[in-house]
Image (cartoon, rainbow over all chains, first blue to last red; front, side, top):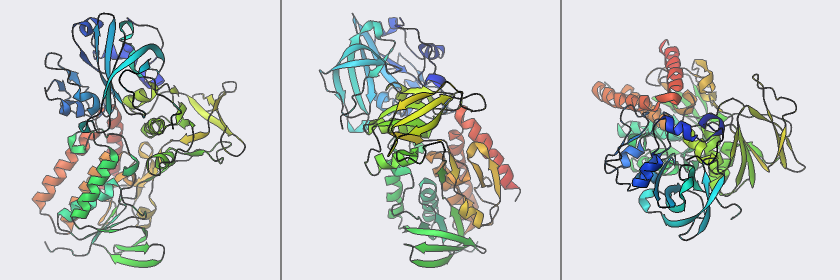
Length: 173
Length: 366
């Protein structure tokens, strides 16, 4: 359910479009997200990188050889533990789910100040445009994340395919 | 084989030089690691992002932590590291001329020389480019990540290669806004995951666009950008003014070849990897006997491949000095070559792989 129809693409606009992501069969459908939480990997370019694979305790994520393969997720094996979110150096992995009229996203965050649980935020799409309000549910940053916090937020479900992060606060220094 | 007890001299303590020196030292060879800066590590300590690659390439580890690990390894091995020391000449017979603290001058007879002097950022000149606030992306990265100084509040980034997009991201992490990233080519250069994380912060990318001029009284107050035609000429009437106080230039790097040139290394021209550079063979040997070139001087890539090139030259130099057996050389070199190959695959790696192949073809005919 796309909220807007804008001409974006990875090598021109900087962000991948939903069509580009769907073309490589990386994203779960909204139906799948309604059944269970799913890892969403937005890594559509062949770069030499596999920390997602080595981070996965369930061996649900496969890059294999050559190391430039795109990652493949086995949703049967995946327990949505979320270790891959902070492990991905490209900040390209989120976990999304839909329950009733609400969607949830777990995403990586490397800006100060960190959001705090209960905070009202603006949810943004892949181009940074604020599409809807959201609420922060949790922020975790254990040592193994190596300084990449993992934030969980909820927002209205109709935006679940577009939302990727929250708006950063400026002028805080 | 008799051991050569003259020290191997490694010039430049960045990722390539550190790894070369570590491999030599581990093999038991005498090594002196020289760097003109007061601190070792080259550019590693300003790399605050997580590296790509595999576990063997230290993927997921942030650059400055890789720097710390390499420094610790060097110190634990008892490395002779000479900082604030410039190598100003390499003469025939592997004589290295060094100047310490710009005061004491001496020469060392080397058993092998590994040149790891890196690369220099390219400049871009346009009206207003001398105004305070115009700087290279590497300069801005040093200011924010090493000196903790924010060069400006609102930044225009020129160039969408990995350096441009990574520094744009890090400027935002440091508290700045990025007004736009402009790219003269019709397509963005950097990794898509890097552009995507910058884009989701609301930064606009402008392809087929260049900076026309910087305006301001005592420093940058505005930047004028314009679309370019297929010959990269600005198209009249497409100008747009951005309110920025900082303009960062990330338009590529050129190998720092001065010492290799003094040493008499034969040069080759490989535009995809930065221009003129010394040709080298599959073990990173230049055309001059016992002189190796590693890292960005041997073709601009990134820190992961620089480290592997350093290791490759280090083990080969240790072997040539009599500190490793033929079998040890083969097994260590084979492992390193495999790791290098894995970094040069895929859409980005293939171009570098082919360019490196051309360098080796040039270097093999010495």
